[in-house]
Length: 233
Image 1 (cartoon, one colour):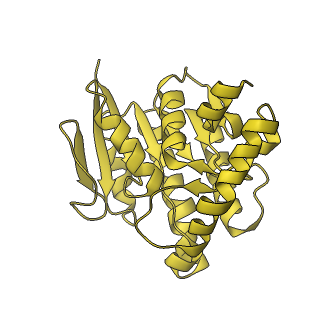
Image 2: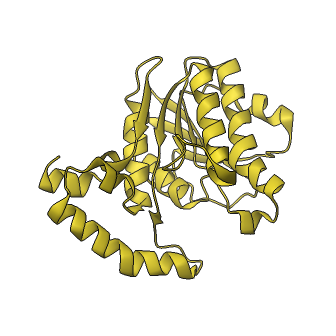
């Protein structure tokens, strides 16, 4: 049976990894929502769907076709968005609209959401947005998996000094200490930097395995299968 998958945020770091993994799944048909055609790498089972996130009608239209799994990897930064309101539209409002539309049209559908460590406390602009989306997802009744990564590691083409500092200096030390001294520590791994590939892999596997009504939270050791598998939980 072919799985029908919709991906929102496929141009982001985690989103690109999700699409790469899905491209290797011949039993899945993927629709990647894009603002501009040519934004994502397409394959035999991946189709770009031009989508206007500001158009309220577009949310129901996209789910007129079957959808077994919705993957949400939308996100921006306050600096890139330009204002609190613009940031909240991307990180909070668009995911809320997608979840609401899926629940209304395909109540048996499943959702995989990229959130953030600390979203369970939900203080401040960034975490408050993530917390609002998680709360809506829980209230929707949809089966869902939520990934709560800490600092994301990637091979981003855009130069960000803080990310380079963390990735090259802090991450190796943090991960080495965790593997050597704290392989079973939930707190240590909860805050450990994690590669976007590991986040995408864990989220996709968990989302595809969801049972009706099931809720899964992935954080810490759930997102670091390599170190934990090697040194034990």
